[in-house]
Each structure stands twice: as C-alpha cells, then as structure tokens.
Length: 228
Image: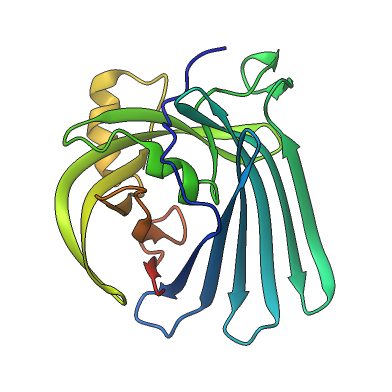
C-alpha cells in the first residue's frame, strides 16, 4: 500500500468546532458543526451543516484510519434532508476495496483520496512548511475523483471570531493532468482556487476556507469561518 501524504495531526478526543458559511456579502447561509472522536485505529468525524432556517441539513459521518504516523480516509456516509424528508444518501468504503476507476478499470482508490468534507480532518495533516507541495485526489461521488494541487503558501494571521490566530495559508487548485506542462501552467490561473487558512499550532484546526460556488469566474465565492 502506497504511503499517504496526510500525517496524523493528533486531534484530541471529543473536539468540537463550529463554522459559519457566507456566500459573497450575504448573511450566513449555513452553520457547520464538526466533532471528532477517537476510535481504536483512528478517528470518527461527524460534520453537520444546517441552513439558517433549519429546514435543510447535511450530515456526514467519516472514519479515518491511522497507518503509523499517516492518516487515510476509510469510509464515508452522508445524508441530506429537507425538513424530515430524505433527499439523498451516499456511502463509500475506501480501504481494501476496488471500484471502476476512470482510465484504470477496476482498481483501488488512491492513497491520497479526500472527500470534500474530509478536508476538515485531512488537510490538517499536510506538510505545513512554506513552499511544500502535494497532490490530492478530491473524491466527488461513486469512483469519480479529480486531482488537486496543494501548496503551503505563507504564514498569515486571521482575525477569527475567537481572536487573532496564527495560520499557514494553503492554496488548492485543480490540476489539468495529462496536458502539456506549459499549457497547464498557462491555464492554471483561470481554474477556481480554494484558499485555506490552517492554524499553525497543533492540532492545526481549519480556521477559514474561501472557495468558489461554481466552476465559472462569475460564480460568487463563499467563505467558511471559525465561529467557536
């Protein structure tokens, strides 16, 4: 099994973090509560996102497995509801399994796989050294994942609801794998950029995340910020 780029950030048992999500200059659209608990060989993470009117919820349960000093996503289960009505359910088991992988036939999932909600845990295990770079496979659904480039850019201070926090800023951008390197370099500035501020001190909580709401330049950006 290939090594994972994600290191164990040693998250304390029972950690609870609260975020708000704003789109452009609108009032908060979502409240997010993330809790992390210890299991025998890793972590159980539960992330719940609730709309401001309380009528829309997404609950994501993820298990992460320790492999020595490294961390990998093991399983994912998500449920979306409008009121009491289930809109959708998703479930996946990533370790020790195979799937129909695009361009690879039946094959295991990549070692550096990260579901979207898994970033709250896995990005804390990146190499937070200025200039450090890594490639991440962002899992979307089924067996579909896209390559992301992650670069630890610079040290910064974020004014959060809980005070000023010293952070490392990490930039995430989709990669155009398979293209001529020069062409990829020319097109990369036009691809949607995600900017994540991760607390410099262990266990490296995510403090702020700015991200696009769609793939086009005119789609508004959103910001998820630490609230408590």
